Length: 107
Length: 481
Image (cartoon, rainbow over all chains, first blue to last red; front, side, top):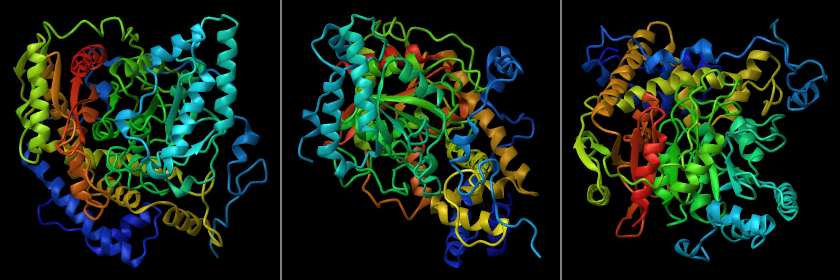
């Protein structure tokens, strides 16, 4: 994160595309400004030399005895899952068995 | 407001459960009292997003029938509670404060809520919050803000603003909220109630609509430390449905709650008393620390040297995790789908564009950016490394101290609209709370004073991993004034 590296409008558009968001022109301007403000603030993390520090992804990384992840994984056994009818009833469009979506391949 | 907040008093959990068992009170009366408070106040406060009047009364009648039959009543029998709308309850709306989940009625119940129901609690409805729990003022709710019961031109804090305000205004005896960076403690501070951040893994996250999975916690709000401890005792414990939930046994939080603070070492970190802390908040917190010293605690200085890096670290990690978690809202399985989109990709884009609010989009973009090719090491990995430094600060401090005392927030409740145009200013409202989420430790905000204009001020008590009992002991002394 170079101190003077700035997020440009095209970066905002690229990231929005990755995130499946479609921003309005107005939103693009606002987001470019906000992202630069936030990332400028985040840049102060560069003051710290962390070369020798192991990244911490989970709280269990630092607990004594490791709260070993495997110890809390449940037995691999088939149990009833959610009722299909009730799950499908939540969907915007369904035939009762499958979720229905618009055309996947554009032609 | 037709009634002054200070005049509002619902019975405590113990009073209620004992009263129902003895027949001097009924669960139906308690529930009706809450609904009458809601009818009186909630048009102004807007704490609830949905109510289940019929379900609550049916449930209360069942409890009363059990009491009449002389059955032993469970721990929360007849206690009227509200649930933050990011936790799912079978058949009830679950919006997460977002338009994208409007109309969604989940087919299952979160484990924490299931445990409340099994313990006899009566659910009144679902509580307003910032969209996907992203915010510090409750102004990011797609259904309109919550107002602070102490001053309705001020925010209740966030993101669990509805959960805090409902308890403060006497609309529920206790509520559940969630805390990813301060979202229980900061609104508890702003609304003059008790709010608990349990240790990471203490309470199952199953059925919680995820924001940042390595930081999210579920915890209680109540008017007293004792009530909060009681609710935590019910919802805590291992759940096979959440692989990060801990198998550590759940102690009886009430067993030592009245033991006092004699012999406890309470740490005070200077890093939490620096620039930006409002003088009135400092004065109230320092006076409370002196009170704890007088009550027998040993006050010791502790150092948390990386504190100033906590907010930037938090906003990288939380947004990165959020960008992944919120990918599931795509208009396919539940919630909002944009109309007239001829292709799948277009449907995704338009549903998300129309369904998410500005702050959620901002955080998804930031999170996607810090995880994207070429930036991952510079931002995400760097933040994870600093997360370890921040956590080690706490582990060292807890060698010297049994609990740590700080202000919960740098200011009392601010005005609606005051920070909505400046995301950075809003993020700094969490300056004293985010580190506990990164480190996984537990904490609580407990009322410790008022500003000259009558706004509540909260003391934050931080405890070791699974050190909730000590935090409650300290809180109990703070509360007894």
